[in-house]
Structure formats: structure tokens, C-alpha cells
Image (cartoon, rainbow, N blue to C red; front, side, top):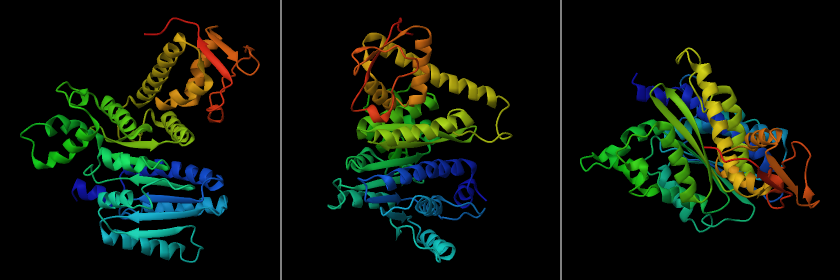
Length: 393
């Protein structure tokens, strides 16, 4: 069996990591929105849903999504309407999913409405965006798109921007970043074959001609992922975060999350932070399938992220006092979880290098470990915080 066929018929470890991350977030997303008074309809779109059940018995995103909805409905009853849109170009995949759900859950009250289609996914996304009923945000209607293409053909700035411009949507996008990284420079060569046109079109839609990602200078894969994350956020005017996933020593994929909602974005960072504690930064191969320096790699990557947060936050706060609300919002935009920010603030406070002013009491706050870096105070800040130290290099 070829590697390409194997990857499509059995669920390899990197694919399992991808759908488990998706399932983690989806469950939290549904629990929160099912209890939210403003949401009366939730649309979940899995537009490249695949075969549903793999030859090795593992369940794909379509079945896992249905089971997650079933679980949330049972544990958190709600009248919120949920519509699950399952699409794959392969009609036999859709039939298999429909048969599986009917066979395994036919005697259980349906937790949601399921819409089955077998269309070209990019054409479907364009049609959804063009539909006059869906092209503008509808009050009380929220949308979640899981986009897991077989490559990146058709994934352009316009496709993603049009989804996010509706204001009530979130996206989880999966991309083969190692392949893209290796061939980006080639894609802009005049002698590039037609197979490189899709990559060139995608990069062209997100990056100007003078951007480093398109230069002759070599760029490591982690910087490449960071550049994609920043470009997605800038071009789609939203929060973005990435979660790298290793397939093997030479190949990485990555999940990219898009959201306008600060709390939703914090939840993604929370899931990612828990997985960072478990694996290092992103998903890495199970022990026995990688080198002997795994534990050291974890420690180095975790400390690297802490240092990045420490340097940025210390320098930012050393200039002028910032509200706790501004710290919360700006740290999210940079991909730092409130837990990481609080750790840095505690370090500064323990060194006597932090000044906090209570806006409600109109006086200096001397209480330890009270920073109020949270979602609830994003619009009504209670503190001014400043670092009393020399900026870090």
C-alpha cells in the first residue's frame, strides 16, 4: 500500500492528534454556546469530512463530531438548535457516514439536524458565502468551520476572509506546512510546473512580494508557521493561533484557529497549553518513534515560549502603565494564555518590579497576585499595571 493510500484509509498518529484537538475544542464550544442566551442556532461545517470510519477502526471527524454533540446534549440539555453539515466530494464516504450514524444511533433521539452533501468543498464554501441568507451575520446564529483539505488547493485569503467577515464564525484549518515550506520558493519560479500554482496563489493572497516568506533566504519551519499565523490574523482581522503536529521527523502539519471572540480564543489557548505540557510545543510522535532527546526538547520548547512571553510583556509594561484589560486583549493577540501572563507578573512582583494602581479605589494596590487578567474585565478594567525595570533584550 502506498503512503498516500495508507494515509487516506487508516488514521495515522498525526491525523488522530488533529481530530482529538478538534474534538477537545468542539465539546467546550458546544457546552458554552448551549448555555449562552444570545445563541439560538449553531452551525457546524465539516467540509472535507472524509470517510468517517477508517480501515483500522478509528473514527474520523464526522462521526466524532456527531458523538460529541450527542454527549453535550445528554450532559448539558438545551433548546439551542444545532445543524451539522457534513460534506465530502466522495459520495461513498458520505453514504458510509450516513449508514454508520443510522446503524449505531438510529434508536437514539437525534441530537441535531444533519445535512449531508457531496460537493467540491471550496465551491461549497463560496456558495455559503454568496448566499444572501448567510453572507451577513444573523443575530443568534453562530458558525464553526472545520476545514481539513487534501492539501491547500483553493485555500486563499478571500475564502477565509469571507467566512470570518460574517462576524459570528470560527475556523479550524489544517495545512501540510512542511510541504508548503519546502516548495514556497519554487512556486514563484518562472519554471515552476502547474502543480505549484495552487501554493503560489495561496501565498500570493496573504503575503506581499517583499515579505521574507517569499525571499531566497532560508526560513525554519517554526518561523514559517508563525508567519502564516500572523498573516491569517492580519488579513482576516481576527485572533489566530497555530498548533503544529508532527507526522514524522521530516514532516509537520499544523492546525490554525481563527476567531473574533476573545473567550473562544482563550479556550483554544487553554487546550493548546495543556497539550504543550504533555508534548512540548505541538504534537510530537509517541515515544519510540523519535529521538532520545524528547524530554529535553519539551523543556527547551516550553521555556522558549515562557521567555518570549516574559520579554514581550516586560518591555511592553516598562514604557507606560497598561490596564489589565489591555494586557488581556494584547496577550491573546500574541498567542499568550492568561496563565503565562500571570506567571510573568508574579515574577516581576516578587522582585519588587511591578506597580499596580487600583482604578476603583483610586490608590496603589499592594495585594499580592491580584492582576485580574481575564475575560470578564475586558470592557471594564479595574487596574493599571506597570513594570518598574529596564526593558529586556
